[in-house]
Length: 246
Length: 288
Ligand code: SF4
Ligand code: SF4
Ligand code: FES
Ligand code: FES
Image 1 (cartoon, each protein chain N blue to C red):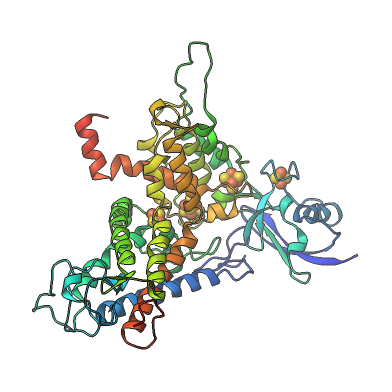
Image 2 (image 1 turned 180 degrees about the vertical axis):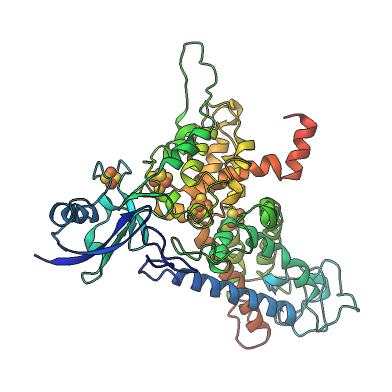
C-alpha cells in the first residue's frame, strides 16, 4: 500500500510547529481520514474537530496546502502523489489546539444582527409566500457555517478589521433576512455602519471557497451594497424620497 | 517559532502563502490584458486618424471606429477622418491641435472607461491584479498605506456605478446606430465584413451592460417581494421577477462578457483602422 507525506501543524495559542507524518493511503481517502489515521497510529493527542464526514456539519474546516477547505471533502488524490500535503488550522480565528480554532467570534456577530420580524399573519392564521419570492433566500439557507468564507476574507484574515466588518457568512445571513418577503425590519442603517458592507471590496474569495457553492458576492453582498446605495448614495433616489416621503 | 510565521504556521509578509498552485497566473493575465487594452485605447485617441471608412464614396454611411462614437466633431485634417456630415457638431474647432487627442475620442472615452472602472467585476479584477488587496485568495496582500477601509473613504465614488451604467446604455444606442449605418456605403444598402464586426459590437456590449449588478438591482433585485404587486403579474411570472431572472442569466456570465465585449471593441477599432489605412481589403457587396 502506498504511503505519502503529511505535514500537520501542532501547537496551541502560544506557538507550535509543523510535524511530518508518513501515512498509508487507500483509494478514496479524504484528508480527514489521513488525520484520523495519524491520530490513531502516531499521535493520539492530535486535536481535530469533525462530526458528519459528509460535508454537512461545517466542523472540519482547515487549510490544506494553503487553501481553506473542508478536510472531509478534500480527496487525497487531488494532490500529486509525491506532493506533501500540509494541513493547518484556520488563520483568522484563535487556535485552541492543533487543528482546532475558536470560532466564537462568528456567533457574536450573528447575535448583533436584527432577527426576523415577520408581518402579521393572514386572516386564516398562516404566512403565505410565493416560490418566486423565496428562491433567492433559499440559496442562503444552504450555509453550513463552516466559516471557510470568514477565514479567507482578507478583511478579517489580513486587514485586521474584525472591529468593522461582520464577514461574508453574516452578509448572507443579513441578505436572507432583508430579502425575506415576510420580514418588516430595516437593517440598512446597520448594514452601512456596524455590519460594514463598505469594507468588502468584492474580491470574491468567499465565493471561491464556499463548499456549498453559495454565490455569496453576486447574490448577497452586491445586492446589499446596492440597497445601501439606494438609501445613502444615489442623489436622485434621495431627492425622490424626500419629495414623496417614500 | 520563526518571526516570519504566525501561530498556525501561516507565513507573514507580502504575497506569502502556502498555496502550491499558480495563484499568480490570474492576476497576471488579467492585469496585462487590461493594460494592453488601455494602451491601445490611448493610442487611438492620441493618433486620432483612420477611424472612418467608406471607400471614398459620396453620401451617407460607412464604418466608424467605436472609440470615436458618437462622433461629435469631424476632423478632416487627419487621414481617414470622418466627413463633416457624419458628425453632430460639424468640424472640429480650429484651435483644437491635431497632435492632441482627437476631440471626439477624448469626449467619449471617459464614459465607457468610468463604467468599466466602477463595474463590480472590474473592481474585483483590479483590486486583485493592481492593488493586490489581495492578489489571490489566501495570499497575503500588499501593505496598506493606512488602516484598511475597503470601499469607504477614498473609494466611495464606486457607489455611483449606476450613473455610469446610464451613460453606457446611451453609448450602446449610438453604437447600434453606427452598426446600422455600416450597412450603407454612399447611401447604398449592402454588407461587408466590417458591417458584421460593427454589428456584433453593440450586441456583446449590450449583453455585458444588461448583466450589470446595478441593473439587476434596479429591474427587480431591490424588491423583497416580487409577487406582492398584483398588477405586476404577467402570465404566471411577475414582470419584475421575469426581468430579474433574465438579467441574472447575463449576470452569471458577466466576467466572460466583460472580457469578450472589451476585446471586441478593440478588434472593431483595429479592423476599421486597417481597412481605412488601406492595409487590408474589406470584403463586401458594394464592390469597392
Ligand atoms: S468578497 Fe468581500 S466578503 Fe468576500 S472575501 Fe472578498 S472582501 Fe471578504
Ligand atoms: S457561506 Fe459557505 S463558506 Fe461561508 S460559512 Fe456558509 S457554507 Fe461555509
Ligand atoms: S466533518 Fe462535517 S463537514 Fe466535514
Ligand atoms: S457590475 Fe459590471 S457593469 Fe455594472
